[in-house]
Image (cartoon, rainbow, N blue to C red):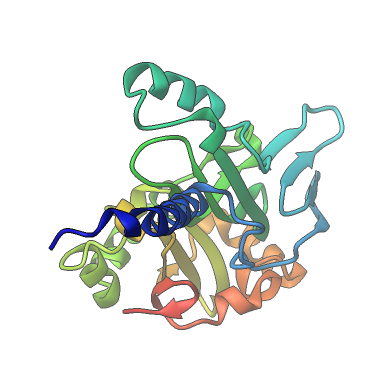
Length: 269
């Protein structure tokens, strides 16, 4: 059916309005959020003495200082484009139709949630856009060793072969690693863990694992494993437990949740 020419002027503004609405919707999907949801647990700001170290943190920046030593930067999150401009500039050279510098953004929060001697665990929640098909998002625990200048420490590196065996024997974790691919592989080789509590001769370690696929980025896998207390860590662990700097004391809301894979703070498996 052909529309009479007399109706064309009436149609054009409608088509234009619909087009503008579509463009606005597309722009909103790339624009940075007004604020990041408060998914990260633990004190939003704080100071803590850990042996010779003094820790100070906000959701944007965390630092450890020690007399006579250089400060150790735990994290530094600048809301805005700073973390993405270089990536976007490179992408523009390779795939100019995929990205614009104006669309780039980054926003993130991070908090200290456990301290055991020189080992500091934070929980991170960030997202941004540096070009490509869609934005990025990540949530996880990260543990570093202040004694090595803040380098990541792996679960197996701290607790030995028992960590690998405990992960392999965990039914829920095995399912997440296998059938559903819900978390990254080989968690014992990563720093995505926090010491949760001491129970008798055992230490309860909570894994806080990012999702394996970009489509489900932003989810967080929380799983507990029970390990024997290593002899070389016994004194340090007991001191941290007494001081209230384990995950169960410093960030009880995060430590007390059920095990499984969470998306937007809802348990999905």
